Length: 91
Image (cartoon, rainbow, N blue to C red; front, side):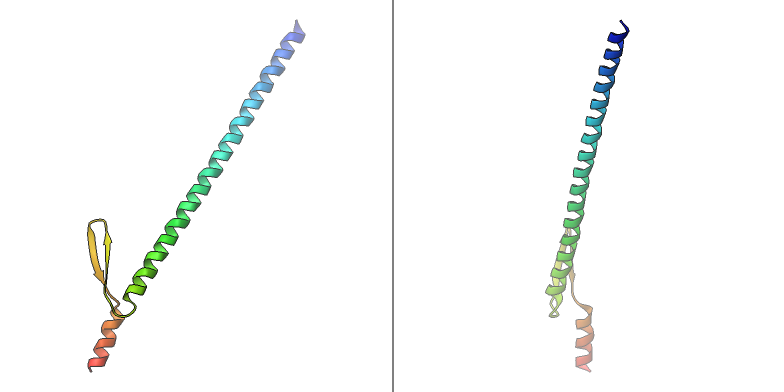
């Protein structure tokens, strides 16, 4: 009778260990994937900001104005150094 209880206990503990190990592995894999997605999102966000800044710079480079629209807000921007250069030319 004691052998059966020992075997049942060993089997139960083995199953519990196996299930626990599977859960930990699943959590680590999920965490790793979420981190990869977060890194990709952050990289894309940074690239988007850089691309936007470079585009605005290029559009205003030759003293031209450009329009920036965010949602329902619109702003026209220009390079202030062009005003300084124009002011110096009129003197």
